Image (cartoon, rainbow, N blue to C red; front, side):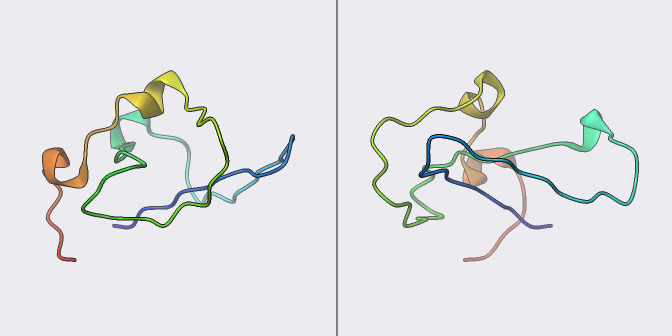
Length: 69
């Protein structure tokens, strides 16, 4: 597994990615963008705008995903 995250520092952005299979929502997951254990050094961008789905993401520890830092 892996995690990916994005921050947009412009007024607009376009994001595209390639998939090799059809979307399976039951396989989707996420972790909190501001998880202190992961400690991503996000740039200062002012107000943070998240989707309602992303606002509900647990921390990595809460997710039950096995990991080592």
